[in-house]
Amino acid sequence: MAKEVQTDQAKGPEHVAIIMDGNGRWAQMRGRPRLFGHHAGARRVREIVEACPAQGVKYLTVFAFSTENWKRTQTEVAGLMKLFRRYILRESRDLYESGVRVRFIGDRVRLDDKLVNLMDELELLTSGNDRVHLTIALNYGGRDEVTRAAKRLAYEIETGKLSYKDVDAETLSRFLDTHVLPDPDLVIRTSGEARISNFLLWQSAYSEYEFIDTLWPDFTAEEFARVVGSYGARDRRFGAVKV
Ligand code: IPE
Ligand code: IPE
Ligand code: MG
Image (cartoon, rainbow, N blue to C red; front, side):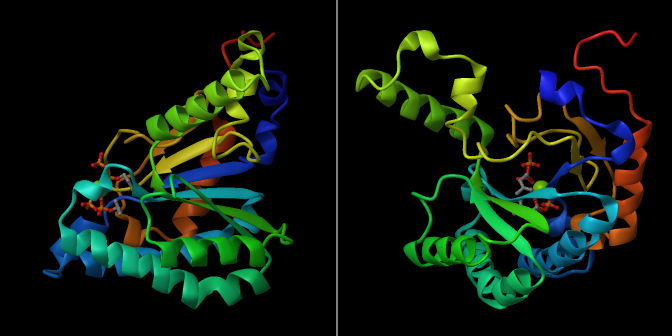
């Protein structure tokens, strides 16, 4: 797509997405419950957000909870939901004051009303900010997102607002949760697993990937800078041949 071809590689990635994996193993290695790792992981997020402007990263998207993570024990799921609520309550003011615009992607229907209200409030509070755009994927799944988009698109067609003839990739992407965001240039996954686990399936069609061994609670701003820096050496072709 024309917009992607114009990406200035020398400038580094404008949008970095992170699959924050390895909290459970980090805790296990310390003989502690998995939730201990999730708390340590949550504390890392601010440091990485703060590292973005110096790296020229305008958009940071982080995977916090997948549509498949409900399969975990009730204790872990409930603990994570409580952590998300506490995180928003604790961090809102600071995020706002440091110019971070926060958005959430994912299906809110299955989330607790109290949590959804806090998410809405934080989005509204930070809606005038533009220093860093932090998107938190919560109850997010790529297939679920595309399915919900297709459903809304089908509704527009059924109610006569759109013709099936108008359906192309551009139209469908307007119905995605990420419709206001550029596609990620770089996707980082921590903890050594080399898979996408249903993250940004549509949007990462031409993203670069970095799979690194560090467990998420150990991921520092220095390592982030190193991984983001290595992106410049990559040759993104988007299917074309460079002349
Ligand atoms: C990622 O860490 C955080 C969430 C999925 C909520 P994990 O909890 O998956 O940690 P590991 O992969 O079991 O170590
Ligand atoms: C992906 O990690 C989801 C998040 C980081 C929130 P998982 O740990 O859930 O993925 P799998 O199960 O290893 O594929
Ligand atoms: Mg994991």
